[in-house]
Amino acid sequence: MQSKLINLAEPIDLEILNRTINIHGISFEEEYLAKLVAEHLSKKQYGREPTITDAFKIYIQENPSSKRDRFVQTATRHFYSFRDLFGNLTLEELRHWHITQYRDHQLNRGMLPSSVRKYNNTLNAMLNVAFKHLDIDRLSPFRALKIKGEGEIKKPMPLITNDLVKRVKDHLLERAHSPHCLIALIQLNTGFRLSEPLFARLDDCILDHDIPHLWVRRNELTDRKTSSSIRAVPLYDVSLDAAKELYKIAKRHSSEWFVPHYARDNGNTSCSAIIKKTLKPFQFRSHMFRHSIVDRMKACNDIPTRLAESITGHSSGGSEFNNYGTIGYTLEQKLEVIKRVAI
Image 1: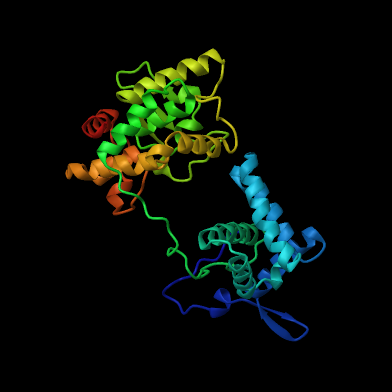
Image 2 (image 1 turned 30 degrees about the vertical axis):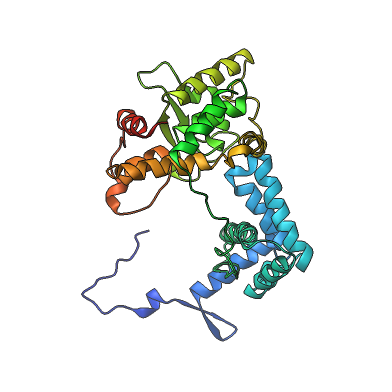
């Protein structure tokens, strides 16, 4: 059957664009009835009004990170802290008032604003996924939450001088038989986040190449949520030596992971703690390697921001130009920068 085309030269019949259906003498817009039917069918799926527990189950089922125990445990903790306070509310009952009351309750318990934000982010994401899955035409009432004190309570970053980093490097080299010290030495001249080398697979470490490098990409232990975080970073000087040693250790253990000792959920927490303990005389922590290499890049005063970000895995947005191209910065370009700032 041929569909009727609208002739733009003729007057438009508004009934075609805005159909109504008469039920018991009352006219309803077709679009309005379609929404009611969709809502009815979503409720029929559960035999009742869907609740926040249903929303949580959908969130876990639909999230690609649900294969990771740590993600599920964290999301479960965030969800139950809310449900324990308000009960198993239906999605229809949820209002912005609930999240503001929840926020105040958590702050009064002594929770930091940054932690309250993490809890809210989980709950907000949960509702967005559930509303989409259930065809509920509604914005999350947990969006745009204001949290008093957010951004104000922040531990200042201490000054990281090159002299300090050199002393830290010497300290680590004296203990380079330990996996955590080798990981720290890799961070020294790459600026990796701790989880990046820690959760890499063995085949992410490419040593038989003109420019040895380590890939950062998704796997069973880690999700890379942004395209900028997925990258290959050259290994140079002590960072390369440390990578070679870790590669040998993994091979001896017949492991598929680059650092088998920490390749597990919360392995980064354990490694961070022992690095902090090892470097306590210098008041130096793992994430300070990342700040240090950024400082050294900035000090050069001529390294393009995008090239620097291709090493560190940051992303500063910008114009559409930044999203075009198929190759990105090469290993040769990245290595040239790393050689300039290496310690």
